[in-house]
Length: 274
Image (cartoon, rainbow, N blue to C red; front, top):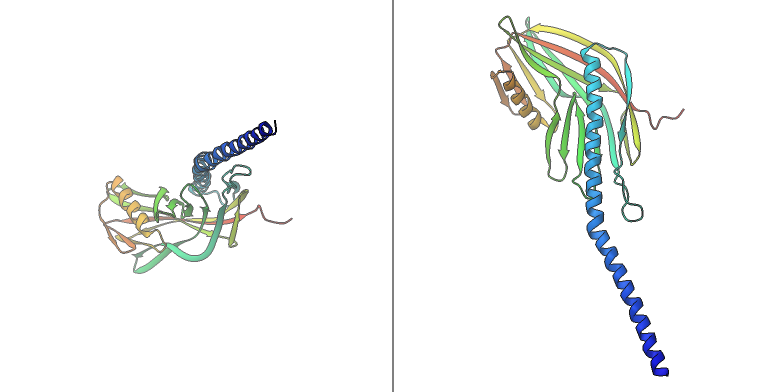
């Protein structure tokens, strides 16, 4: 009879161990297969959400500037966190940075009536997605352009270009440039919550100058993609009198430059204390 009890005890232990092994196997499969796929999808969707939010900001800014809406302001959200899985995977945070240092990032210069004129664009903001499963990305706003940078692969594309065109009027070729300058406090924040960016269009100036050539200098980390974009965009307008040298592009055989300059105050109002 004692022997039978021992057999029953061994069977009970084996059953418990088997149940534990099965549980560990299921948990391991959940952690190694389901969690990565789920989180990668979440992070991918979050990156696209950020692109959509920044694109909406650009659309409103472009509309205000194009229609001359000075002293108009608006507030737009930026969702910083990609949702996680409670207990198993934390939310993926993002870093928001607003840099209004004033250093020229894009410059246009040309000669008119014997004077050499310079017009600059400065200031930018970006969101860096600190992804753990999907490649980390920077979503960057510079001079009305939205750049999508893959940090892991060190590659970038212009997701939406700046306001730029080449037109023709009575046989004259006209270069149309928009230059945005962001001003306001330097700001950096990392988190998983939603931040609110406030934009105020402080001033807009529009000028036209006669000239036969103009130089566009890109003084930021994305000169290569900017120059490629301007070349491709110019060809769409049927314009080919263009030359690229280093981080500079020259537009030849033009008769006029139209420049729209906008000064835009930007700040994150989410962390302001009342």
